[in-house]
Image 1 (cartoon, helix red, strand yellow):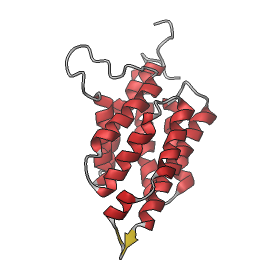
Image 2 (spheres, helix red, strand yellow):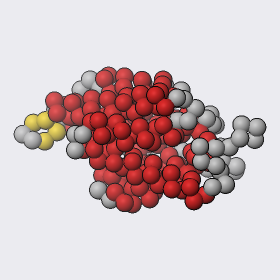
Image 3 (cartoon, helix red, strand yellow):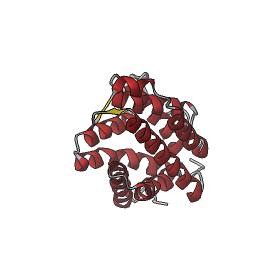
Length: 205
């Protein structure tokens, strides 16, 4: 594991995680399932250091299963080459939710992660406020990765916010949507640096 005082190495690993996360979404867009799993697993093995590598990889498989189930729904709601947003909104999203729930269970996330992630991806395609549920979902994911049930534990004001890391994730999604891959990766580096720093702290601290 990267030591907390090894700042250059921590940043390098965080950069690799950010790049692999972006690649995971690119491979998803390109329908390259196994390559998407491997990219997301690179990230999950390092961010969920409290579980085995095999369990973290299973969590990545569950995430990809959710994305592919979402794609299947979108395909079923295509008319004349375009997604019918009303049909997609009324579709059965239980397979997507089930895959997200499996991911949450594997790494000890709050089960509400599944509902919020499903709602976020649903609204992402059908319209509406997807950014709030995606930040809420990432808060649950960060709590698991950091092993900090009170994240974001802010010292003073703004206690109702989602925390800077969850906000970074949502910005990364926006940059992905506009195909600004390099900026998306740069935005996510501090996100993963925070996780790596926390996971390398001695348990006696």
